[in-house]
Image (cartoon, rainbow, N blue to C red; front, side, top):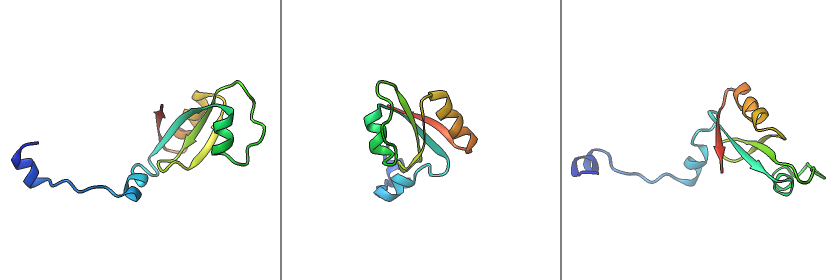
Length: 89
């Protein structure tokens, strides 16, 4: 960043709330989970199948929206809800 950019575009820190809302209603994060992580993220889920990968669809602020056993189904869920799917590693 040069001196002109510093003067013309001062950096303002983003609050935690602003960061959490970044992409809200626009982006869905797709996260691969094991059964234990899925049970923690989705408390109503009991006895999730062991040994398979599950995929969570999360809102921009991390709120769980959907859970599936297929990455393609998770992406389709995001698209059906007019959200842009983004992978989380």
